[in-house]
Length: 335
Length: 97
Image (cartoon, rainbow over all chains, first blue to last red; front, side, top):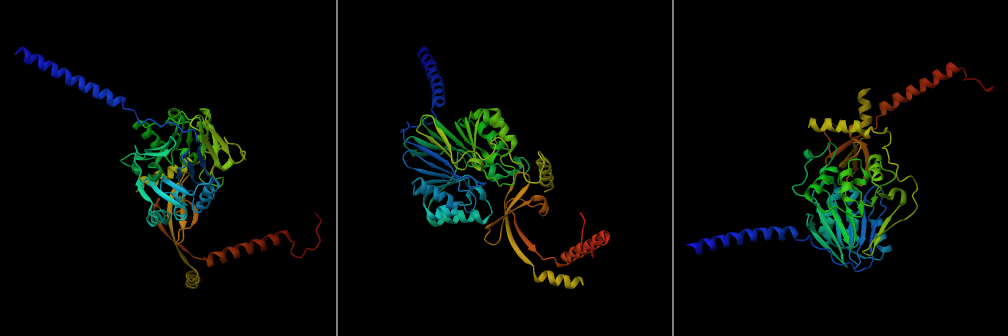
């Protein structure tokens, strides 16, 4: 009888120890370690496509990633840049979301260069531009991948691209501020890691998405930020910028935009946190180079204006965006 | 008269297809217009029909409004005449400034 009790106690002890050990092991399970950097050059070219996004990444081992393809007609800008940098294929095209200022030139790129795989948020748009993009994937036989957090793309040479968003279930319109939309909120958000260098690419994600990312425990800490939604006042919340600890921020936008991008509000938040700012509308193409230790940022030309001055939509007084928002809010509740 | 105006308008009307790609900050709707959706037009959301939202397809009817133009021309002409009469400069050749 006494033996049985001892065995019972021992068994209970072992089970508890096992559970504790398992929990500890689970906790300690590393988020997959980044491979050691080869020391070769990683290049990130934030192309000047006007009021849109297109970012060409050339990894140390020669793998090529294109994040977005600018406004319609930007295909040529992308193809020219590829030629300039000596790459003749794209291993992964990321379509952060289905708006024409991000996938505008995607069909053209797909039809004129070899693209192996396409990563899409899968939140659709009803435009011909988005249909043409899907049709081009179909025609060229590129692999079509729905983006999901936890996906990792090994770019070789120690560089890696990881998907942080869209987080399922997708944002719906009723969860967003009035005037916001699902394609933006469900943008594909990725992080690029190479040695001690890191960069966060946020598509047109705004504050709601930033909050969800922080809540999900995603690793948003990075040296460089590709600013969300072209410097919109609704993106780059202070909390997100603080938690990300970004040293530099790059805004991809066009001088002729009528949407008030970048907004003074967002620029002030970068300035308050001493984040170094780069803008394609004023400096042309912005290039980040890293060999896995530190990084360097170059611009195509010196800034043609004040980097810290935001844009106001034509015909609108400062802060009059509020009245437009009120109108949208009224409409939204009317539906 | 009204009938003939309508006839003039319908003879020169055009139907256009458009899709609202997105609504940007400040309530600016970004439209892609034409059957190929290649032409971008930015237009305040407030100028679109109530309830229009991103992703919607639109049919735009464009009419040349001859009547409105004629009315404006007539208003302009009478203003010119009124001003000239008021200034009394119709027949004047030499001016001392």
